[in-house]
Structure formats: structure tokens, C-alpha cells
Length: 580
Image 1 (spheres, rainbow, N blue to C red):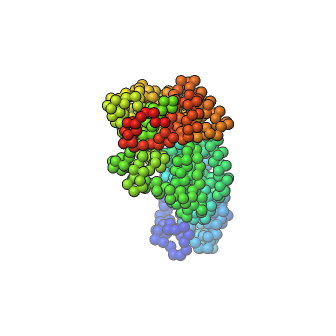
Image 2: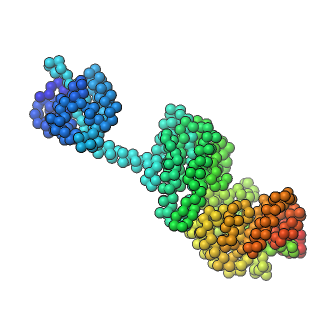
Image 3: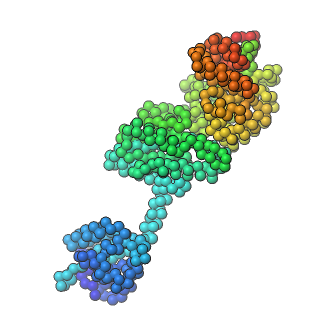
């Protein structure tokens, strides 16, 4: 019979009188001979050398040893982590001082080499012969630990990629801030990820995210961490690093490591990511500020173009707040008739006659006045408002074309810009086709302008959709011709009819030298491929004469006319066609 036992389950380390639970446990051990044998908890005693002196059948079963095998065995031989022996030594020291230790978790290993987690309660037993032992009551919590680990994985890890998730990173950032440890948070957003989902399927999108996650995991080394925040957004946590140059170099190396493209089912997608960077303590005093500012910087990077990295500054926050306000107001701009189309005339350069107009949207804001497209088009693309906006532009332009035809001006072209978002989304593109089918007009005098970057970012699907527009009778114009490598490498493969010479090349005409040679080469290349050439941004007579000399057929620019209202268009068409 065990005597003078003290057993507690109330706290980690306590000192004082026995609790009610202890008293009940002591009574059971002293008055029920079967309690030790039948208890469904581990009951063991051990001496100051850490040797087991007694263990009940349930404990023998948990550890997988018979009574003969485990008696006199040292606890440390059963430990998974040998460093835990210091815990046992410390426990004995605390217990010998009269303290009771409760709810102490230690991981052991069974005879069958199975890891088991035991939660212990220790008390000192003083015998009448002045000898003492430690009485330990243990509960097998292995299954509970496994469940806790599973729940922790659900709570702190991303199921698709296996990376840590936003919740984990928020907790980690909070802990770093508490101990005032400097760090850098990089918010990453994959550019044009929606194209994969829209043009292939969501399974392919998931495979792509897993690929990016694996590349990030391989590149980022401990102690730094990487997480998937949501959707196509990831984050990197650089510990104890706030050197701007070092971070820039690391991110450049990361871009090179991931590679320029990803291929699936014979479709090649170019990979780039926009990155926003916030540092602690410089860029925020708490986790909310750090995450917010990294996100704001990332959005700023996206507006600057693909694959950019931007460090947070207070000015960016002010701009972001203004953009949010403007974005909210844009939702009502169409309903409130605040949008208006301006038309920039395009001229036959040799005859001086008007050949058509490029439709350009403006926002007539009730407080801010006329807002140019560069102020709100990128924002609309980012928020998804571009779809509704472009549908309004297209319908308004088609209605104007219908009026031109009724007035006998059937030969006038109207050029309409189409964003990469609209081109890459099959759902939206189908809606645009439906709009086109509603208007009984001569589509051979409708020109759809698309940028090089919109085509090259998703070559296969862009070509297929442009061909669908051409089957309706429309002409396709490649905007900003000459600014990207797609013009020269892929030009012959594109279903286009017109190339628009970028205004930057036109403005360099007067510089002579190398720029002049490049312009001539581009003009000759386009003409050899039987494309019509439209020059943008003509501002001087010298530029005009140069373009005419090298067979550029059509042009637009402030030399001839700035973008004008429809009322001004009507007046212009009444004038003599020879207005140059």
C-alpha cells in the first residue's frame, strides 16, 4: 500500500495543502487495492536517481514494457529528446522543496519505437522510514497532441501549397514587434495570374501556384520564411534585415531563380510578380500597419508595370487613400453620366484628309473636373471595373459609328482601345462579342487597338481572340509598336492589320542619328509585311515631313488636332478636308 501521497492536477507548480482531488486520489490508493492495478492512467514511482521503482499495468501497456523490463529503468532512456532529462532533474529538485508539479508534458518513446506524449503530475511521498519517492500520475495525450498538430496545421498552413499562411505570418510579425526585432516584410502578387484561370482552368491555376510556392521555398532559406497570404499573393519575411540594397539584390535573384516563364499543355505563360516592401520599425508600429503598408507598396509596384518592387513611403499611403476614394466614385461615374468620349482625328498624311478617329475616354468629375485616362484606367484594371468601363466605351463608340453611317460618312474609321484584362477573360470577351452583334454597322471600319504587352503575356489565347474579332470584319491595330520585343520577334505571327508607331519614336525623329535609323527600319519592316502604319504623337512639321517621306500613311497628334468632343468633331467634319 502506498502511503502519504500528494497528487495535484490544478496548476503547473504549486505549494501548500492538498486539493480535494489529491485527497480523493490518496483515499483511493490507500483503501482500494485494485485501484493501482485497474486505473486507466499511468501511476509510477521513482527515486532520486530517476529510476522507476513501480509502475501500474496501464503504464506498462503504454510504454510497451513488462514490469520486469521497466522496473529500475531510468526515465531518460525512455525520452525522445535527451535534453528533457534536465526537466526531470529539475522536477525532482522542485518536488523535494515541497512543490507539486502538474500538467507537465514530456515526449517519450515506447519499446515499439512509437512516440508518445505524456502529461504528468508529480508529488513527493515521504515514508515513515524517512525515505521518499516521487509519485507520478501520467495521462497519455498522444492522440490529443496529434489533433492539436492537425488543427495547428489547418490554422497556420495553406492547404494547397503547404506554405505557412497569413495567420501564421501575422502571429510571427506580432511576436517580432513585441521583442522589437527588426525585419522586412515583402508582399508579392503574381502579375496576370487570372489569365491562367480564365484561359485554361482552375486546376492549372492551382498547379501554377504550387510551382511558385515550391520555387519560393527552395530559394528562401531559414530563418527567413515564406507564406501564401491568399489567392495569388505570397509574402516573405526577412529576419533582422532592413538594408534596402541587400533586399533589392535578393529579390532580383529571386526573379531569376523562378524563371521567365511557365509552360503547361503547350501554353507558355510569362512569370513576373509585383512586390511591395515594408520594414519594421521604420514603416509601421504594429502588425496591421506593416501588412497594410507592404500591400500599398505592392499595389504601387503593379501600377508601374510588371515585375516591379517598391519600398513603402508615406507619400504612397496618401496616394493610395486618394485612389481608394476615386475608385469608389468611379462606380457611380457611368450611372451618373460622368464619362465622356473624346475623339482624336487621324489623318491621311499625304492628302490631309480625316480618315477616322481614336475614341478616348475622359472622366468629367463633378469636383475635380476632367480626369485623364491614365489617372483612372490602371485603377479600373486593378479593381475589375475595367470590364464595365470598356463595355460603355465600346457601346458609345459603336453608336457614334452608326450615326456616322446614317450621315453618309461610312468611310470614317473609329479606333477603340481594348485592355489586356478584356482580352484575357473569356467570359468578358464573349460579352463584348455579344455587344458587337447588336449593332448593324460596317465593322470593316472599326479598329480594335491592343498593346504589345497584352498580346505577349498570353500569346496563344490573344491570337485566337483577335482572330475572332477579325472574323466579324474588324481591323486589329498593334499599339505602341516598337516599344517591346514582341514587335520584332512575333510580328509575322500576329493577326493584325495596322501598327501604330509609338510616340516616343516619333518624338525622336528630330534627333537624327541612331533613332532615325531605327524608325526607318520599323517603317520598312511594317510595310514589307503589308501592314498599314499609323504614327502617334506628331507634334512638329519636321516629324510630319519625315513620316511622309518614308511612306507612313496615317498619323495623329497635336500638330493636327488634340482629342476633341463630339460637338467639335461635327464642326471639324464640316470644314474643308485639306486642313493641314
